[in-house]
Amino acid sequence: MEYFILAKNRELAAIPADRKLFETYQNLGYRFLEKTSCCNEKAALGEAKRKYGQSRKYKIVAAMLFVFVAYWLYFYTLLT
Image (cartoon, rainbow, N blue to C red; front, side, top):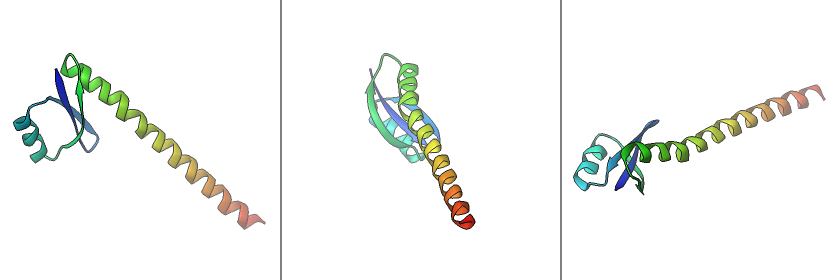
């Protein structure tokens, strides 16, 4: 069965690939991410969480690294 993966803020939702249901969710503020084929809604949601959850973690780590390097360079130039 096919499912639409939708997102709103940090919430993911998997709904059956039905146009009217999709439009209802879109009116509630959800945005379309992808269309996937899975055996049930729980499997589709789990796959989406694995796929879209990892990228958020890498962005947070990269931002923390950037702030640390910027902080270090700022104080290193003050001391020299």
